[in-house]
Length: 93
Image (cartoon, rainbow, N blue to C red):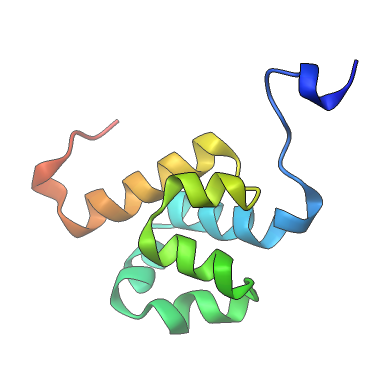
């Protein structure tokens, strides 16, 4: 079986820092708030590639996945930023 036959593709090792950033956004409310308040100071120390940082900043789920983000993790991190920024516009789950 080759990778093209798989329904799910695991995130590549090269996307570890990106997935770690998304995980932190999703699971650490204080970090998510820092990302919203001062993106560069919060995300800069994680060592993301420029295109990864820009995809996180833009909340571009399609680009995040193309860069190797786990699809669900990308969705949940973007959702976390959106709900933190505008809590009355979203349903919590």
